[in-house]
Length: 116
Image 1: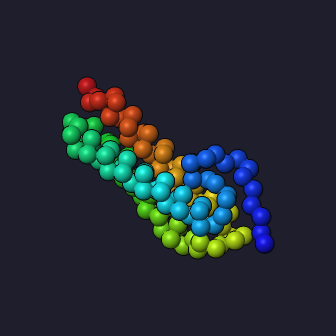
Image 2: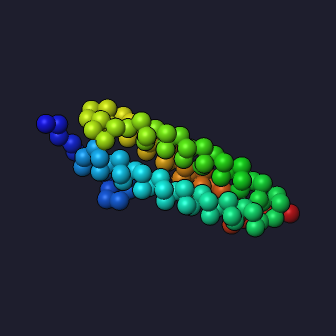
């Protein structure tokens, strides 16, 4: 029976190493949360001025592409991936980081408002 470690993980962040199925489920929940945030961001982009909206939509598209890549990678991850789970999980976590960065960039554009 393979053992796992909890090195460097924090509760609720989608990086737990407490079992293949639980890890996949946690990552799925985290991705679903990001999907909701991206959708909300797109609504804000639609309500923003034209210049701001276009910039936000472009940045949100980056977040959405990373989200879709992470979802695809997660579907490839069998619930009993064993040794392969680590590299697959790391790939999904990198994509989650890409989502976070793109989202924060788009959110910053909304906070700044129209460029005069």
